[in-house]
Image (cartoon, rainbow over all chains, first blue to last red; front, side, top):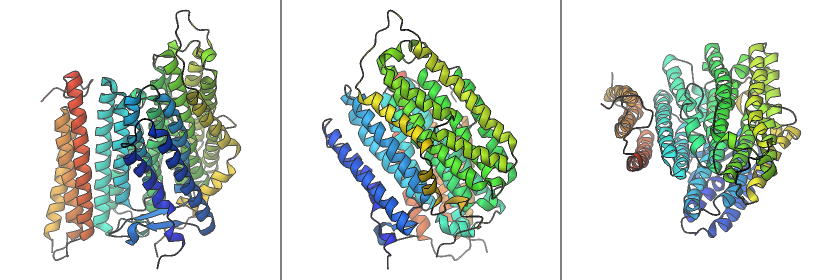
Length: 498
Length: 105
């Protein structure tokens, strides 16, 4: 008998609605995209809010697809962490969709190709965050990568095609490493369910090898230094709304999986060497990424390298959360909150940059002179989102880094605190380099093209949300922690499925 | 007693390692896609073989379903990759990524 809480239709709707929209958008002409977008977005937000309400009333939400259930069927699951990631996707995705309506207004040819891929990507993201088993995570992550590569090559030029192919090869290699790890674990335990695996997993050599393969595969997909080589060309050469989707949302999916797997399923295999090592890679990414961002000629490449930096911060979660059970809650909430704030802020920055580049018609930082006068809203959005990327108050980035700093100090790891503080300064350097250019007076020969008003407004809304995440952090943090995902479940070693 | 499954699984690991070597060594994009398929077959052999490593174990339906799904994913990814490689060849006449220092084998 299926209980009330396990029969919630909102979980499958969150996956089906965008997939249906993806199929339908082939039938609708360019004029139909608006109504399809309005209908699907309403449906997704309605389902998400109902799911959050159900979760607040009844706790963890389950849904066996078709009533089959594991092991032959597929179980879907939503806890506080899933809901936070779904909320992040819906917020960022909605504003990028509105922006895309304006961005593709004079370019129906690309617009027609953008929408089905973007709906597929949205469906894949929601499916990753709702998956409850290792294999479904593989399939949804592959769907995510393939649609992301499709979006990169949408720009249609040689650079984006080469970047897309490089991205595809990296993504395929990452998936295979992940799947090999899954095959070894399935061979050892005969289950794929995350909950059941969490109860069975023991850190024996073969299992540690499997966990390492999974981790390397996902690190490649999250673009952690030194496996970041594919990210800057792919994110830098894609169209602006696509770059925002890739940097904001796509890399968060594999990071989410790493957190879930390591802190729910493999916590017994966490060693100090591993956590300090992955934290060190993060620290190198923070500084090397900032150095390279500062020296870019092109605005979008600068922002893409900034993403490498921010991915580095995300991985500081590992040494901070694994050090002691007292620092774990702050570190994990801080890491997830940083992922969410970065998604919102980085999407705002890429959208604002897209508007600026459409105005100046050339992707060069030294061509930005006079943008402050012609595109004040976009520039304001860029600066506001920059505040969150630097981690200054009041912003989501500040709250996240504050939580991480607390975890660093309470676990006595001052060196990670130093990385957090100095890294913020390094981010400030490259953001101010762009702002300084924009405030210079325009050159005489400069021509400026008009852009639809929805583009700067979408960027501004996201930048506003990035700040609001700092002012109203209580609700999202509570949502994240209820249902006790990850280690927040005190230090109980495992949660065995009934 | 060791079952046939373990031999398949071990062959799978060898294929995966060989494929990984090829993935690093080859610059030609079509070779890279072929090598990706070899690695994939290795994973599938492990997926089917490892649960049946003890002789006399009945076939595992779940792992068969997983491999079928995996094959579908691999075929789609390969087709997509080939389409991109053809487009790159049309645009540039190159069969490898730009800035790839490795010599053509």
